[in-house]
Length: 249
Ligand code: NAP
Image 1 (spheres, rainbow, N blue to C red):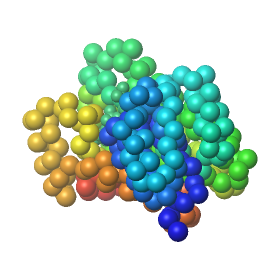
Image 2 (cartoon, rainbow, N blue to C red):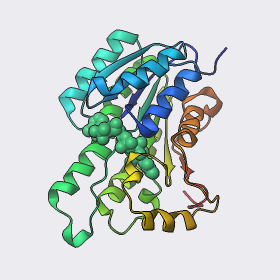
Image 3 (tube, helix red, strand yellow):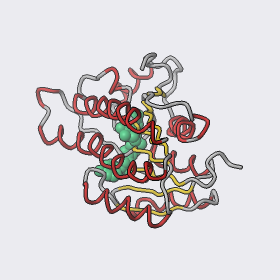
Image 4 (cartoon, protein in one colour):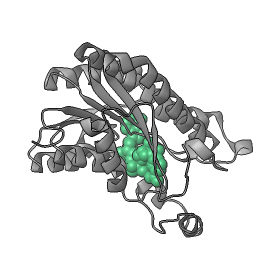
C-alpha cells in the first residue's frame, strides 16, 4: 500500500514552486490533495498532475491571510473530502528591503501572508484534526527564520514566527494525536529566487556546502516524510533542507 493511501492533504500556495512539487509528491505517495492558491485557475496544472498520479484533486481560491476566506475554504475541503489528515502551510511571499527603508505596508504584507496565513489555516484545520484525533501539520519556514538576513527583516521575522508557532502547536496538540513540524529550506530554485540578481545567486552558491541550489522536490520529499507515519515520533522539529548552509536548528 502507498505510504499515504487513504489520506487527504491540503496544500496552500500549490500553483507553483515548492507547493506544486509538494502536492505532486503527496499524490505520488498515495494522498488525495486539496489545492489552495489565490486563483483556482492557476491550480489547473497541479491538479492535472495529481490526477495523473491516480489521486483526487480539487482546487480552492483563497487568500491565506483572509480569515473568512480560510474558514470557508477549509469548510469546503472538509465537505468535499470528508476529512483532512495533512496540512502543508506553504504559501509565502517576500517584499525585501533594508530596515531603514522598510515600509509598514511591506512589513504587514509579509507577516500577514507568511505568519498570519499559517496561523489561520492551522487553527481552522486543527479543529478537524482534533476531532479526528490525528493529523500532521507541516509548515514551510526558511533558514532565514533561523539566521536572519540583511534586507529581509520582515521575511525573517515571519519565518521565525512560523517556527515558534509550529513548536507551540506541536506541544498543544500532541495529546490529541496531531503532530506539527517545520521545514526550513535554504536556496531553492523557484520564481521566488529567480528574481535575485546573478551576483546574489553566485554568492549564495559559494555558501552551500553541497554546491548546488535545491529543487522544489528536495523540499517536497522531506514534507512527505514528515506528513507520514514514518515520522510518527517526530513533532515540534525544524528540518533544514539547505544543502548544509545551516547546521543547527
Ligand atoms: P513561489 O514560487 O512564489 O510560490 C508561492 C505560491 O504561493 C504562489 O503560487 C503564490 O501565488 C502563492 N501565494 C502567495 N500569496 C498567497 C496568498 N496570500 N494566498 C494564497 N496563496 C498565495 O514560492 P516558493 O519559492 O515555492 O515558496 C514556497 C514557500 O517556501 C514560501 O513559504 C517561501 O517563503 C518558502 N521558502 C522558499 C525558499 C526558496 O528558496 N524558494 C526558501 C525558503 C523558504 P502568486 O503566484 O500570486 O505569487
